[in-house]
Image (cartoon, rainbow, N blue to C red; front, top):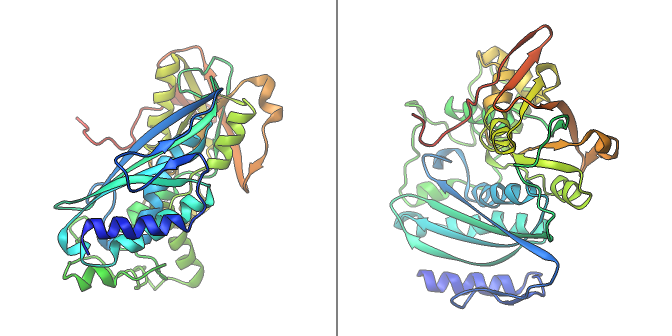
Length: 370
């Protein structure tokens, strides 16, 4: 099968799925054609996932990778208060990976998540590459002028975050220590069928995904479930699309950003764009309970992971004091927590714990750190 055969196969597969009636021409032409409507703004976001930087072959599966590729872009649309509508995904694959069932399993994960949120895949590209490269693009929509920006927080606004923090960072640490899911959602045998060797992480040996992670004394069932939960926070993140739609449609959020680089970095980004400061309460940070349970015994600081660990893809947003009472307690079963307040001290992002207060410096992930 060459790339054109596969595109035709994917095109036929898409015809059997429910698609937006506004797509006049999807996969198969030089560009997709979508009808526009008055009073609506379009949003476009793009994300790259690079093998060895954003994921490791031996730690994930094609289906999980497909899910994550779309989820990271859905999170960006949610952070603007918009509804996702259309997507494009491009793949660069080594030839030995092309000869496996990677591409079919990847699109299974990708399209399953797309169907959950009513997103129509309308195109993309496929090329040969030296390593796996994934380019994900998502288009969203909302009422004209209703996009929630990073630059519109004001002093006195209350600061909130969805869900729990630190799980994805803890999952990455566990992967680097050799942990793998106890029950993989789909087989990794394809890596071996193509003669591709699993790559080591952090200079150490990589355990098979089907093996339980090595823990002194052996993991009990509850600990294995906790480890799996943290691994999936890294490998199969959940985009808070429902929260994004509610915050945007109800005009509740004054400013918003998704937590992709860590709350310490992303809060600083928001404050810089809005020319404000912030103070957050350490005790109010909703740390993932599995992080608290597992990381202490592995010499990992749960609060540090929650503050500086990236890829939680939760939403960090501000709400004016008069609208706080209108804020739902949960959306799609995901709670929200008030963690602090916006101040009129531009550039000063602080964290408070009892009587102690200090600067919260951006220590999240940077691709080109100096």
